[in-house]
Image (cartoon, rainbow, N blue to C red; front, top):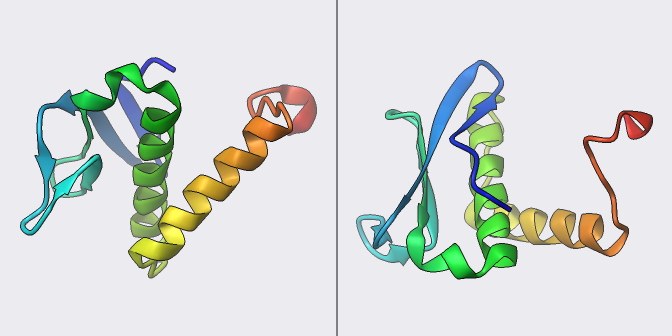
Length: 102
């Protein structure tokens, strides 16, 4: 999956960026969402691993959904939901943009 240039979550717009060495204050990360700057940043080292890059993007989108809708989500539930939802979509060949499913 090619990374989109922008993701809209609710009324907020986030630019999607790929950069070297994504990190928080305490650790190196595969991705992060920066709400104040309206950015989702994905480590460019994941460019060759489409499945993992998609999962990291989805993980950051879930953080954004929690922020926009005021849901308190810790890291573990986000990690589990991102992996579980994408696994289910992939195993069942679901095209979630298919209008017949909506």
